[in-house]
Length: 312
Image (cartoon, rainbow, N blue to C red; front, side):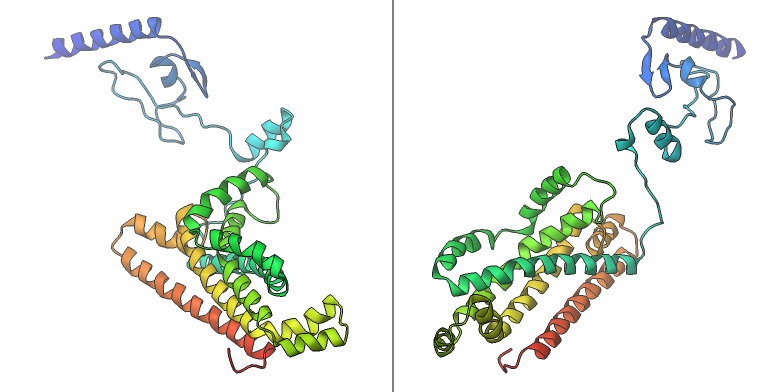
C-alpha cells in the first residue's frame, strides 16, 4: 500500500514538473505566473490572514495554494492613480452600511417629489400655452397622444443610457441612480397635469376673457389675475393624478433598475426567498399604499387652501 502511494506521488511530481516546463505563463494581477508552482508561492505561509492553506502534496495539484494577494483598493489604489497622473480615475466610496427600511422609504419620497416637481414645472406652462392658443394646442396634442401611453418600462432603459452618457461626474449633487428614477417619474407623470391645465385654461368663462380685452391686460397680468385663479381647481386635479402616477412609476422603476428605494426592497426580498420574505413584501405593499394615500391627502389639503371652488 505504501509503495503504491509513493509511486503515485512520484508520478504526480513528474507531471507537475512537465507542466511547469511546457505550459506558457499566465498573465495575472500578480504578474506572469506558471501554474501550479508560481501561484502556490504567492502564499508566504500555510495559513495567513486570508486563510490560505496548501493542499496535500499528492496528485497533479500537489502543493497548490490559492493566491493570497489582493488587488489594491481604497486609499492605496487612489494613491497609485494619483502617482500615475490619473486623478480623474480616483474614486471615493464611503460605505455607511446597509440602508434601513426607513432610509429606503425616505429615498423613495425624495425621488418622487423631485420628479414630480420637474414634471409640474414643465407641464403647467405648456398646459397654459395649449389652453390659450389654438395653434399651441394643435402642436402639443399629437405629442401628448403619442408619448402619454408609453410605459415606464420603455422609458427606463432610454433614461439610463442618456444619464450614463451625460452625467459622468462622481462628485455631483445627485447620484446617477437618483436622477434615473426621478427623470423616469417626470416623463410618466407630466401628462395628467398638462392635459388638465390645458382643459382648465380653455374652459374659462368667455365673459372674463372679454373683460380682460376691454381692460387691455397684458399677457402676464391676464395669466396671473385671470387664467390661473380660474383654472386652479383643474390644475390641482391634474397634480393629484400626476403625483399618484409618479409614485406608482417610481416603485416599478426602482424594482427594475435596482435603484435604492422601496421598489428595490421588494425585489430584494423576493430574490431572498427566506421564510420572512412574504411578510416583508406585504408590509412594503401596505407601506406603499399608505404613502400614496397620504400624498393624495397632502395635495387635497393644498388644493383646499388655494382654491375656492366646490368642484374639487
